[in-house]
Length: 186
Length: 186
Ligand SMILES: [Zn+2]
Ligand SMILES: [Zn+2]
View (cartoon, rainbow over the protein chains, first blue to last red):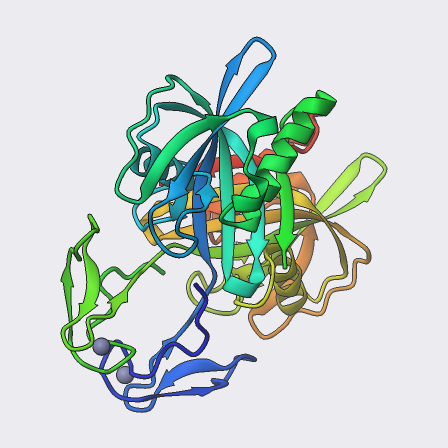
């Protein structure tokens, strides 16, 4: 979650920081009053998948019911914060494993959504399920497949989940190839 | 630049931090010894454009020679860190204005590249130049157009710049539509 002005003390030397515009800059930054280090705050990335199970012309998608805050009890696509040391694709695969215990074949990036109010970019990859057995981890109450008409639209955890699902079923209905969707969530 | 273990002191309360694996986690994090706040470190986003000027079947691309470190004196596409409060498209447009003073029409996202060793994701948008007058800012020594055969391949600032340019000219040569390219730079 984007918490502006989250620095009170310098993580390098422990002295107090001031928020001011450094020389050669045009934005307020956390500047250390002692060592003068500048500490930047930038948007972070959430990575996940849209796992689906296809049989003939029927498709079901995998959702996880959250066992953690925020949005405890609401349904989400498997997703979480991208970590240092991994690519966005690896992170999406890791989250799918951690939250759903689902076996997938990762497909191309499907949605890139800027969520400016919380300082996040959400990246969702399509993913073909290789099995319908799931082993949800401790962050998930329940993982199950949904047909489009069963989707819990009013109990989805995040706007980007809804927007990603909406586009997926629309692309299918129109017989469109699955190209990247970019969107801004305000 | 990704500097792992960059926290020595807690930005919330100023006490010393330890790096350890918190309960319910599986990675080392900076954990405050006093207030127990956990401070996460995540990859950050660099956003920029590939600005081009087309006349008939001729195309030129805009590069900027860097007036700042790292890679002072080398050529780059206009790009920089995504800031809180803006979308990736707005950030790419802002950097193009700040570094090149170029008037552009932003086109769809063209490259998404994970640069795991430095903890970054680079996002480049194609951009149609609306004029060939540039007003480079203080971070740029010079901004100019290059035909493909003039490109300073050995004096490019970053791998992602080279990979983006290479794909652009390849897509053109093959007459391919400009779909998103995803790549990992190691
Ligand atoms: Zn300091
Ligand atoms: Zn603390």
